[in-house]
Image 1 (tube, rainbow, N blue to C red):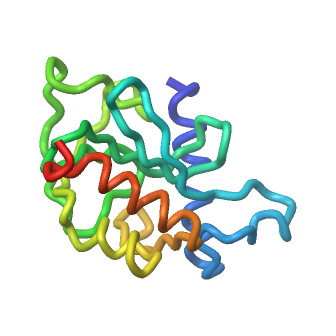
Image 2: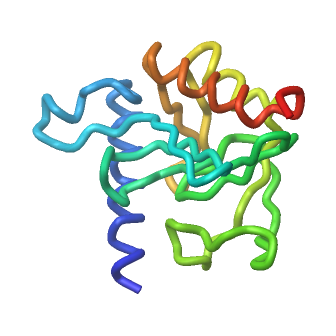
Length: 158
């Protein structure tokens, strides 16, 4: 239980710090000597994962997954895109939530959702978590990663 709880609480704290400092994905954490949170894209076979967290760790605040040709994506994490619809996870349809070991409720979001499109176009995503609504930022390079993620998953591509 603590193996899941400690990284989840740490990730939520980092999201709150990044949002309050106005830094989002910028290197504000390095000025304070702390870890830097940012956006990254990973692939496991055909599955694409867009993650916001500390690089090369399990400290993730948000992860969005999709397959090529999907019209929607699955969202896991301590924060959720503002306006996304919660849906109870179907254990047979999706892999276990990597942030909670399968205990969390997943959220589905369309690939054309304003939260995802805004992240790619303007570099900002409103998310809701325990502390309320926060803004997560993306650098220009991260915005390109998000746009590539959306293009990879798009039903038009398939």
